[in-house]
Image (cartoon, rainbow, N blue to C red):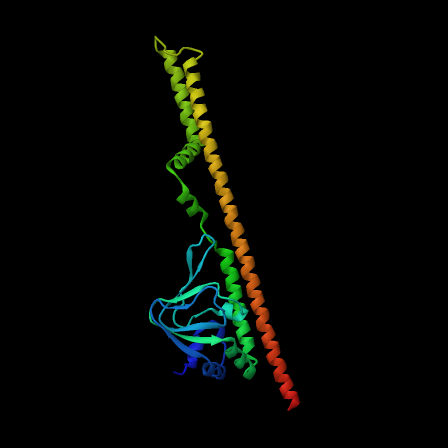
Length: 278
């Protein structure tokens, strides 16, 4: 079954190719079909090929540091997956599974090399689209975090933690100061006005109550402060992970851009050598 060259217009990295360049690429790629739940490749397999979805749906996932599966992409018609491993000539870091009956275009480095051999300037178009995707990835990393620290903190909260936070929040507010001052004033005035005062001046019973309140309130406030320190540490850890992820991904993209540039230089050199010999 021949591949329709127009499908490459829907793939970002090939969208700038002209009709002739798409036709050349279509002549060299293969079409493969997968049944539902069939694995296309798994993590650790050689990354010699990339795939473009013609029909169906694919799930691309990986395992995180906690050994939990994480879905990283759900490519559909016209979308490509496995490209980074193909360009870097490295093993796949993800696993791709067909969610339903799926047809894909299988493309390898040889197909790209043949295109560059016959149409060297196509490499500039591909390099342009890779650069745009790189900038989009940078922007995504800048505005997005791996996990929401507020959600992480909320999941770990217990009833005692929430009570401690509310007590500390109320104890450090003007509402508490005003209400507490009003209670003290009423207590003193009542003890002054009633004939038989239960706590005459110097209000020893009141001092006992205040000492008991301070003895309970101080540890509760310290508990809340300790939780705030834990929140700050979690946010710092998440920021560190985001920075590390951004550094790794940017290094990988730069390496792939360097490989594409090397291939383009080699193709242009072969074309120049062929023209000179002619």
